[in-house]
Length: 155
Image 1 (cartoon, one colour):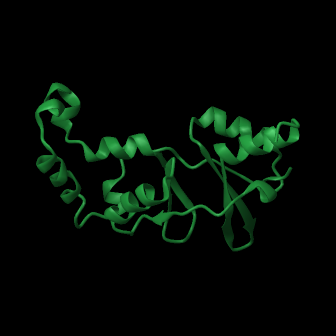
Image 2: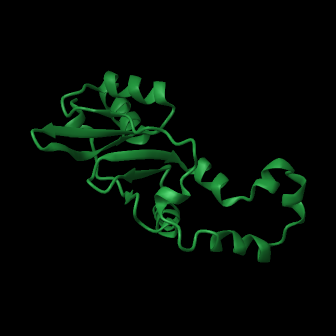
């Protein structure tokens, strides 16, 4: 099945959006990863949820996990306050994943290989034309597995 048929709409933010909106989007939509587009709609980054959680935790807690056991919820609430005033681009972890993408005619195994190599559960499907590229949608790991089960007669 070509990528254009596997691709689904996927919620995203842009680099200029408030960081708190990105956290809210992941939380409210139960997303496995955050898709970030730059201001002209080109995929900019894909960040797994676990890496976003890491950005919410102070470095001193990462260095000494025993501190996490003694920090109460009142202090945990302050972590979200650190997002105030930051854009998504300012808040993203330094090590983000460059969004992997395929063209609309890419096959299932090509998508699976790109996903497996990148260790990111999303592959963008981009349609290119003379003016640039347009996001058709995203193939998620869950969507890819559903398709593979259907093809294998298990669905």
